[in-house]
Amino acid sequence: MSSLSLTTGLRRRQFETFQNEILMATHELTSAPDWTINMRIVKYLNTSRNFGVPTLTYLRRRLKHKNSQVQLLAITLLGCIVENCVYLRIHVATKPYMDFLLSTLPKYYLYRKKPTFFRRYKHDAVRAQYVDRV
Image (cartoon, rainbow, N blue to C red; front, side):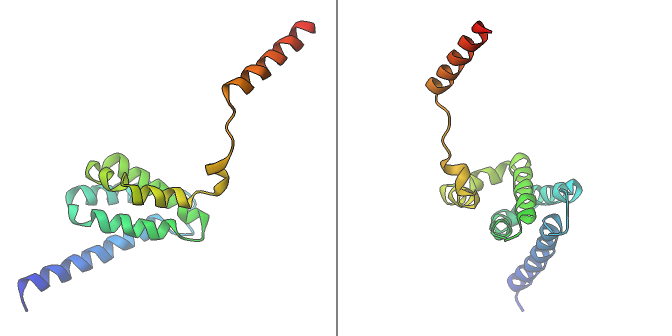
């Protein structure tokens, strides 16, 4: 056996244990984010930069989960990773990853109408007239 196959086997086992950490952080039965596990994941990502991109792809799978609690915990973990791992911000900010994050949002949040300046101004003017009369 060559040393290359030993190192890839070792990395694979390390990443499998790392996936278990991510699975524990985004488990269905977890009611609130466990910040000790999240910071342990961030610390591990900062010390060994080999698992950055595979971690983001694994988080993508967790974001596709049908349970909304798992999605919320995965978004919390992703936010923690983006805030604390500087080198992964570039990978999260790519167009395909951002398009994926936008596709996970409900359509209501993407296409709702926002009030314009004139509508607010008209509403405030009507309110001011009403207050002056009373």
